[in-house]
Image (cartoon, rainbow over all chains, first blue to last red; front, side, top):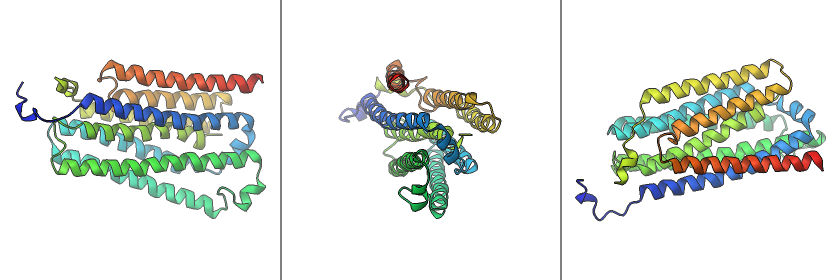
Amino acid sequence: MNNSAHIDEHRDDEGAKTGMWIFIFTELLLFGGLFIVYSVYRYLNPAAFHLAAEELDTFIGTVNTVILLVSSMTIAMSISAIQYKNKKLTLLLMGITIFLALVFMVNKYFEWSGKIAHGIYPGSPTLMEASQGEILFFGLYYAMTGLHALHIVIGVAFIAYVMRMVVKDEVQHDNFTILENSGLYWHLVDLIWIFLFPLFYLIT
Amino acid sequence: MEKEQHTHIVKYKTYVIVLIALLFMTFASVAITSINLGPYTVAGALLLASIKCVLVLLIFMHLKFDNKFYGIMVASVFILLASVIFITFLDYLYR
């Protein structure tokens, strides 16, 4: 193998990827814990959860789901693009991913500010008059979608950082583990949303 | 060489097909929620979410093409999570 140029390069692609996966497992268990809290409280307060979920806009939820799914595809495609040595397409696909993530956050902003304008936010006087179950539902709604949104922000920063590396040719067709890892992180964000969406927006 | 891990390139077309399947299941889960099926609504929506989850893991996250060891680790974590949920509910149902 013609590998002499890399002779003094210290790299462990498998190790880097395994590390990323182990980190993703901790994230899955973090959100998994929250999902358990959600399911127990929903089991204890089924009627209040139904009532409270009516307040959420299924349309915005669906739009955000579509946005995340498409952005997940574009980041996955960017890995194929770098393997085909197509730098321009890689950057374009990563750019689209970041753009879609920002659109998601704008939707989230309007959604949250709409709720807050209606006086529904943790500890608000309106919410304190509601039943225990509704207080729990909105507490979990803000905590879980908020933590998820934080992950979106981190994902955008991570992808932007890798984009800079692609521009500088530090990530190339034979050295793109960090791009794969940023992709894995982005898919994790997508995976969590796949479960958040039916659990919060699709209760009838 | 380590590089052999990366020789597999997923076609763009594969990703597009997976995305269409994911979008289809999203709209299907919205549709089944709007018709009232009682307890089956939640089960249906969660089943579709689980299928979507598996598709994302296998294709987008490359588990299908990667070393088997990643897939085994991911499956173990999900089994762990499922057992914890199961045990928690045993506690709540029979306390």
